[in-house]
Structures are given as C-alpha cells and as structure tokens.
Length: 343
Image 1: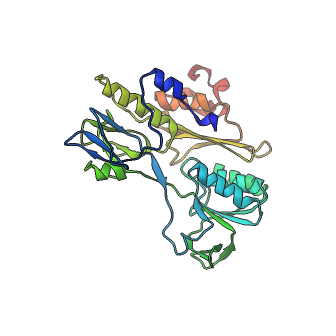
Image 2 (image 1 turned 90 degrees about the vertical axis):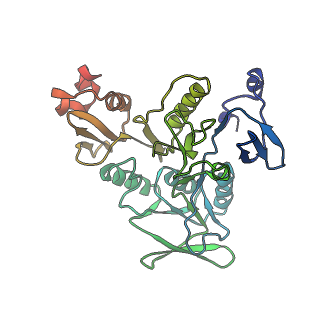
Image 3 (image 1 turned 135 degrees about the vertical axis):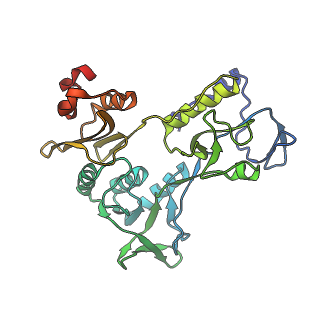
C-alpha cells in the first residue's frame, strides 16, 4: 500500500540511512553497546531509539484462541476480516472504541450481520459523552449494526472454529468471526530484555530518555512521566523531541490537547481535551447534530462534536491556548461566528 509509505527508500539512502527490513533486534548489550539481531549479528551503537509500538490485547476468556477469533491491528488482520466477510454470516466485534466501530462498519458494508459488544452504555466513551455516543450508536444501527451495551464477554464457543460468544448474563450470540478491538499494550519486550525500567511502557523522561540515557523510547511503547499514548500526532511530537535530544539540544515533550476524529457510516465525530463533568449542550435533532463544551474556571477544557465538525479547529485552539472565555460563554457553542473575538 504505497499511501502508507512515509519515506521512500531512495530518500533514506540520500540521508545516509541504512535501512534493514526484516531485521529483528532481540536484545541490547548495553555494556558492549551492541544491538543483537535474531540471527546473532551484533551491530554497534552510540545511541538507540526504541519505537516498537504496541500489541493488540486479546481478552483471556475461554475460546479466545479458536480459529476465527482475531485482533484488529495489522494489515494481516484486515486481510483476514476481508476473507471472512466473503461468505457473509455473522460477526461479533468486542469493543466499541475507534477501531471497533471501524471494524464493525467495514464488516457490515460487506454484508455481514454485525453485533458490537461494549462494557459501557455508549460507544467511544473516551472520546464522546453519552449524548454523542448514543446518537452515533443509533446512526450505525440504521446500517444494520446491533449494539449490546453494557455487555461483558464471558466466553467464546466453537468446535474447531468459533461459532458464537457467551455474555456474562448468559446470553449467546452466533458468530462466524469474532474481532477483538479492546485496546493496546505497549510492546516492551526488547526494553525488558535489555534491563530498562518498565512501567506500563518503557519509562522515559521529557527528553524521551529511558533509564539508560543513551537509549530513547518514543511512541506507543513509551511511558513519558507516567503517561502512555495511542495516537499518531503525539508519537510524531515525541519523535521530534527525541531527534532534538540526540542532537544535543534542550527539548522537552509536553502532552497537549490532541483531538480524536472518526468517520463511520458517513458520520463525523470529533473530541478533544477533558470531556468529564458538566457541559454546555447544543443539540439539533432534525439535522442530527450535537455538540457539548466543557468549561472550567472560565476556560474551555474539552469539546465533543457530532455530525458537524467544521468548528473543531476553533475549539481545539481554545483548549490548547487556555484563553479565558469571559462574556462569550453563552454563545460559545454556536461557534466562531458568534464568538468572533475568540476566533
């Protein structure tokens, strides 16, 4: 898939970068300052950047290893879902987050009867409030996707291959394929084998240095001052900080208000910041639009947009800047056209 390639091989060579595909590093010999490959090759280093990403979580329930049960993380996972969808049938997607809803929509478009299991009363609870989440579930329901919420997966059934799932309340749902989209876990195997400090991820400071200052960690594998990430934008920001650190420059990674955007079944949703607590709501049932803004101490700290996300940049700037809202609070939900001084 050429669109996924961010750096052409020729461009890497032009920068003096030696690209070694299909080369797995199994350990870092920190005393000898050598990276050890799976083939036993030892590659010398001055500094190392670990960017091993994360692994999809597979729930430890009975039947989780049956054929037809898979995670949704890699291109191979997508290909497996496409093959399963050719025969139609039923699919159960475990997890109503970003990836789970994308998987459900894709399988439904290919003719499968899809049920989404989610432990919370509405999908995407980390990005959406209950109002926007319920509207999204209702919209996806019109495409034939069913939701079981709240629901807990207890077991997966099948003789030689998955045939269905069992919920904690005893209910059974038939399934020819089960897709687990229940989150990720930082891939810390290399760091652990190399004796680096591990928390949830590879523990790193604001300069992206691990417990060994000559070894840096960035992206989903890292835990920076107690926080792990799962989005592209902060991972790229961490890469910039790591590059500055390697160059001997003083740089610090500071988490920012990154946004999450999703388009499923033709519906746009967007959120950013802290979306807990009370918020100002603007809802248009006829146009299927919704927005909720979260204010604290005269500042916008979070926002949820559903249906119409054209003002997302305006709200993200307000969240990131921490500007006081003042007399514009009453009109803020109407957007920058009604709060011009804040735009």
